Amino acid sequence: MTIPDAAPTQTHGGLAKLRARLRELYLGESREAVRFRYAVIVVDLLLIGFFVAAPFLREFPAFLIVDYAIALVLALDIAARVLASPSVRASLMRPILWVDLFVLLTLLFPLWLFNFAFLRVLRLWSLFHSEFFWDTVGRRYDDTRWEETAKALATLVTFIFVVTGFVYATFARTHPGIAGYVDALYFTVTTLTTTGYGDITLPGTWGKLLAIGIMISGITLFVRLAQTLIRPNKVRFTCPACGLMRHDPDAVHCKACGVLLNIPNDEV
Image: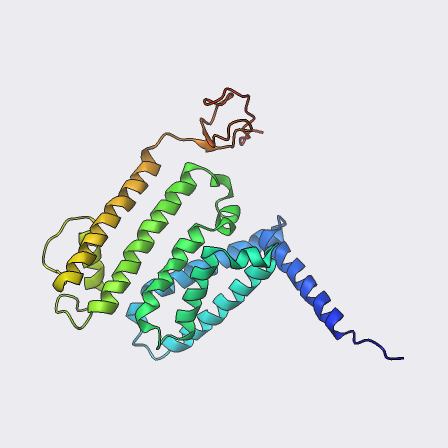
């Protein structure tokens, strides 16, 4: 009589315990879990700061060492979030995860994907558009105008640095107007705001088309940010009858169908 191998069962049990522990840390409500999530967000902000400052740090000898160390941290974070998710398959289908995976690739292959390194700043967009952030830091402001404003601002800032990185990677040292990263940032901001001083212009048809795209996108993003700031304050609460999601903070009845609402607030 042969004794069945217990290794697969033990391995499966170990993975289940690991997932349960990670789920407790990433999704739990305990004080330990909240502190852990705050630490993860602080690390995320430090990574984003490194991505923004990377063009100024490339010449330092230790740059690649820091780059690979950050790749390890990001890989562990991505793996932990996937394992902590209730559904691994659903987690793998989320666009935010694919953004983070591409950022990880640029860190793992910095020499091959040098021209795409500017896309690392997309991590800023994925952080501020994740439920992980709003369930932790922004819990009080979740589903409010403050969340929409922060997301719109993060999108605008991300767009500025992504375009700046693209202009720098494409035209630096080949176009006399773009001598460094600050010149690329200056061109992006002046074009984005349609100021158009004209002291830096990109050559050829593609340069003109890029400037047009920056101006149109910039106007759209500024309008979006202005809307979130000016629009009357509403709370998100789905009406059980008609599905209307935005109501006045003190609404008792739905304006669309008149059904009685029970909107929770800080006093309850």
